[in-house]
Amino acid sequence: MYIVIMAGGSGTRFWPASRESQPKQFLNIIGSATLIEQTFARVAALGDEAKTYLVINERHRALTERLFAGRRLHILTEPVGRNTAPCIGLAALHVQQQAGDEPMVVLPADHFIADESAFRATLLTAVHLAQSGAIVTIGITPTRPETGYGYILMGAPHESFSSHPVYRVERFVEKPDPATALEYLRSGRYLWNSGIFVFTANTILQEMQQHLPVIEAGLRRLRPHLGQPSYPAALAEVYAGWPSISIDYGIMEHTTRPVYVVPGTFGWSDVGSWEALYELRRDEHDTAANLNDAAALLVDARGSFVYSRTGRVIALLGVNDVLVVDTPDAVLVADLKRSQEVRRITEALNEQNNKRERDSSCR
Image (cartoon, rainbow, N blue to C red; front, side, top):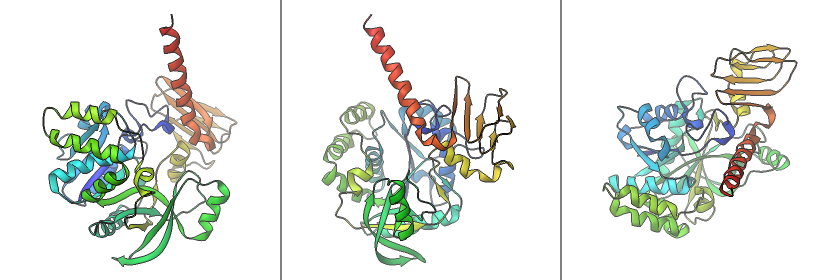
């Protein structure tokens, strides 16, 4: 079994703490270790760390090498981010070269898991199923009508393994509106899509050949360059011609291969926003439901979250549900309940910077 940890995301919803130079997975927002270190530690007990691949953006190579100095894991870099399908294809190519048709557990680097033992047991069930050539995903039993996640509609029950129930996947579902999310929750037939997948290297490469032929053709062109001095240039060339597409859109919604889902009940969060982090750290809230991660002064404030690593004095007076994120060069003040929209700030900043570049080039 091989482990592939996808760590190439930009983490725009955690601006301004998350930046291109140090995105969310490289932040220590839960505990003293970064999220990517916690993810690695969580799965390291499953086997040989030399069978672990971290797939990161090239710009984070030095940072990643510092965090994992002395480890025997492999670091694969992407010249540019192209979403999860190219990332997984690249890892599958390397796994196939090293070990042939081995199962691969593919998971994001920035999730939180409360019960790590139960999580590993669920993964082992998925690995067992994947050895038959099936595609397996981990679904999360929903606890609320969440509109920020995709869903999985469970079909017929499949044979259980190690007391874990298994179901055929009937279909993957887009993020719903509130009424539909409530309907999904009440039906008991839907699971949250965790973005965790298990399959063998041959299985996923065959699927790419059928459904993502441009990516598969690039991987074939890249194969003879593996381990050669020509590899970086060849990698840059194939990535330049690849689309940005997720594994869900590219393969899961089109495959005719058996797809199974193993429901997970191990305390999962994708830590997808500042509000999600606020909820996740509920045991740290004060009596007014504030999360104070900055030694801030809070007077008549309720339900607010202050995050800072600058040491500056921060004070809140007479406000509710406020988010304050203080960094050396930027400060965010927002409605905590709208923190899913923080990416609108990064989009606006990018547009502002692009406009400045266009204006300067016209002078």
